[in-house]
Image (cartoon, rainbow, N blue to C red; front, side):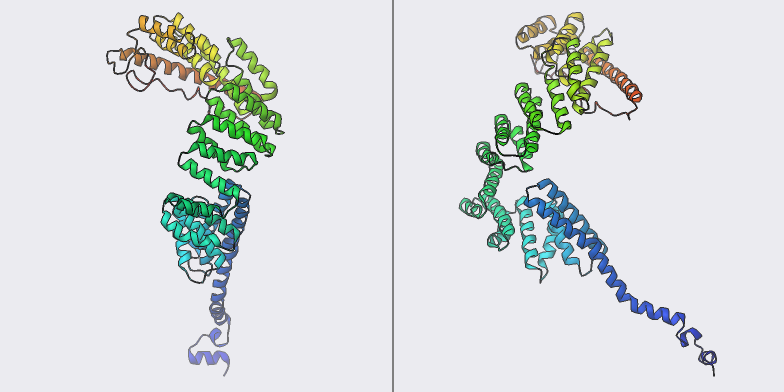
Length: 505
């Protein structure tokens, strides 16, 4: 009997009898299932765990070099990559590694809410690699410190202060000192800090002093590090914190300490520019100029030179008495500052002021707004004062006159008393001549004046936008909103009388 006859007799398909395609396909599918699972596991490793490990190594190197911001970014990348493994292959053999990489990466990039459950699950599993377990424990302890769980943090961290891995021991000691200090265990905190290098200990003590708002001690410790040229990315945030606490001299002291130390020129330049911007915002023009001149002397970066030159040009406008003088100063500044975003804003605000000055509205709104642009965006205080006085004298019968006299008073220490006396005697019923709690003033006049200012402002901005669009089209460049960061564009109407808006007389 042939094979086909045998198949017919048994009722079986011929292909199944003779090992044909169907039989071989079924056999292959059964045999390939474990291989497919193995390949999926390999993908989980090579596409996820491997890449997460590489990002973690990069992050650890950056952290050891003091590049905290860059390290945080690399840790975040490691965490995101490891999370893809946990999502796609929740029961793969690489889950433990993925938990470690995701949890530690999230903890060290500031996402403790996501890190804690990952690290907790990882540490609960048996037979973990000792080095990874120690690093994961430190990361979890750090999250506990951030959350104020100081007792839990101490329980995890203190046994690792004596770890063989020096980095683990240092990190554990630093965090354990924070926890002990928060718990009032001062002697233990000092003992833990004694286990790490002096510089690290001083940084930690400075951070603790800042947290307690002990600014004098924080400053003294930070100056010690600055004199050693020990710069970290956290320095800028620390300077911001001191500035917010109105420790202005401390900020200047620290920046100058770094400037006199063996700090890289690029770091000195960055700090000078940072300090200058803070000082400009506070109206401390002389000190800001000194920092800008130092930055320009140190830098080899043409962009930094342009930005410093632009700010120096802006500072030079403060005492100029006329529009012609302001125009000429900005034109001279173009030699070194052209191409700077700061300088472009100066030019655009100059154009806005000229547009407002060209408007001849009866109420004097555009002239008043030109004074605000001169004061707030160009910081040409002398010119601004003269414009406000011009509004007050040429529109003496309008409600805006009182507002203009008060604006001029703020810019004229020598004449402030006289200007305010004019408002008291001539404009007693003005909505701007209010005293706290006074409800008898003319609210209608106030609303009308502010509405007129808003309409004039909107017209000025539209004209400026049109002018810039035409200029940029002629130059063949893509239109950009160069005024976006201008103080003038962000003008807010004065709050109603009797509220917390303007200063009482």
